[in-house]
Length: 175
Image 1 (cartoon, helix red, strand yellow):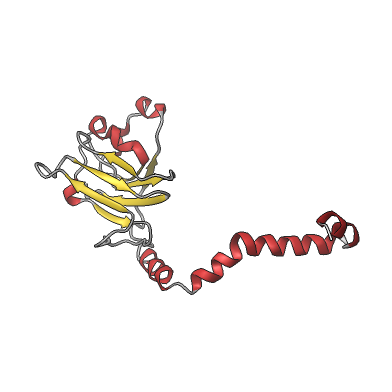
Image 2: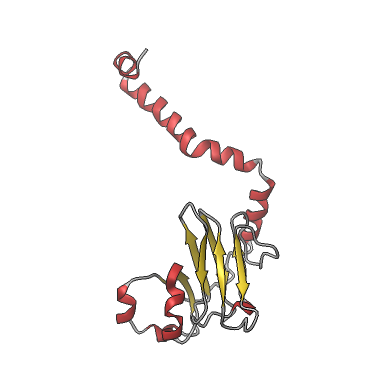
């Protein structure tokens, strides 16, 4: 029987309940169920739980991207808890500081290499807190899907960050 023919003979409230149950399972339920079986997911949840209240009582600023940044005096945020998104590192020399955390997303189907040379980014003290498989408050010793490559001649200010396709990473800059 075709879907439209079934809709004609099944009462609307029953059809909606069945449809909602199906789509709930398809879009969320099966993922929720399967992640409970994953030891990797449980470990990641425990690491994330360690982040709770880590900065309790402190102000936090999330700095996006766009032309309005040039019209805003972000120097006032020096010393504050800040999260910078994606290409904010391009503004680090102008800001005179790096954000506390850098959130980088690669939504492409190809690896992305971010050249950090000349952007006052201190790779020698940068820690990966979230990679393609794990999240938490402590540095990940061997990150997956993200790699930091300091320049061998001067790892203080030069280097590159490489992200695997469809990856989000969070870096603690150490600043």
